[in-house]
Image (cartoon, rainbow, N blue to C red; front, top):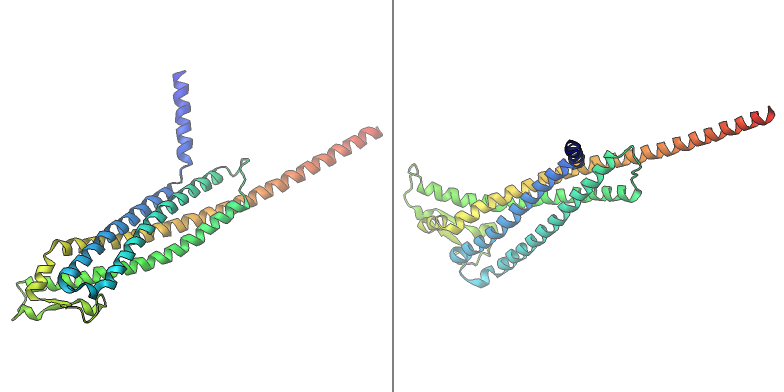
Amino acid sequence: MSVCVCAGCFECCIKCLGGVPYASLVATILCFCGVALFCGCGHVALTGTLTILENHFSKITADHAMLTDIIQLMQYVIYGIASFFFLYGIILLAEGFYTTSAVKELHSEFKTTVCGRCISGMFVFLTYILGIAWLGVFGFSAVPVFLFYNMWSTCAAMRSPMANLTSIDSICVDVRQYGIIPWNATPGKACGSTLGDICNTSEFYLSYHLYIVACAGAGATVIALIHYLMILSANWAYLKDASHLHAYQDIKMKEERELQDIQSRSKECLNSYS
C-alpha cells in the first residue's frame, strides 16, 4: 500500500514539474536580479555623486540646485521602475504557466480563447517596447561609468611611477565641460593633489563601482526582456496553433456526426423497404 502511495506521489510531482515554465522562470529571475542591481546600486551611486559634487566641485548650493532636483527625480523613478517590474515579472511568469498548461493539454478539452490570445499578443508588444526602452537605459547608465573612469584613470596616471610630470597641479578634471553643473559653479574643477584626494575618498570608490554594477544590471535586464520576448512569441504561436487545431477537431467531429446520421438514416430506409 505504501509503495502505491509513493508511486502516486512521484507521478504527481513529475506532472507538476512538467507544467513549470522553466524558460519564463529563468527570465523572471534574471529580470528581478537585473532590476534590483540597477535600482539599488543606481540609487546609492546617485547619492554618492551628489555628495562628491557638493564637497569638491560646487560648494554653492544654488549652482547645483537643478542637479539636486534631477537626482531626486531619478531616484523616485527608480522606485517606480522597481515596483513596476516586480509586478510585470510576476504577470509574465503567470502567463507562462497559463500557456504551458495550454500547450500541454492541446489534445484535451482545454480550449484557448480569443481573449487569451489577445492578451499574449499584448504582452509581446509591451515587452518589445520595454526592451527598446531598456536599451536606452543601458546606454544612459554607461555615461557615469565613462565619466568616473576618466577621473579614475587621470588619478592613476598621476600616481604612476612611469609618469614624467613636472607639476601635477597642471592635471585637472573639469566636470563643467560635461554639463553636469553650470560654468559659473565654483570651483568647478579639481587639480593635482586635490584631485588625488577625491579619488581616494570612499564616496568616489563606492559610486564608481556601483555605477558599474548598475550598468551590468541594466544589461542583464535587457537580456531578460529579450528572453521574455522570445518566450512570449513562441507561446503566442503555440496558442494560435492550438486554436486552429481545436477548430479543425470541431469541424471533423461535426462531419463525423453528420456522416453517422446519414448512415443511420440509410439503414432505417433499407429496413423499412425490407
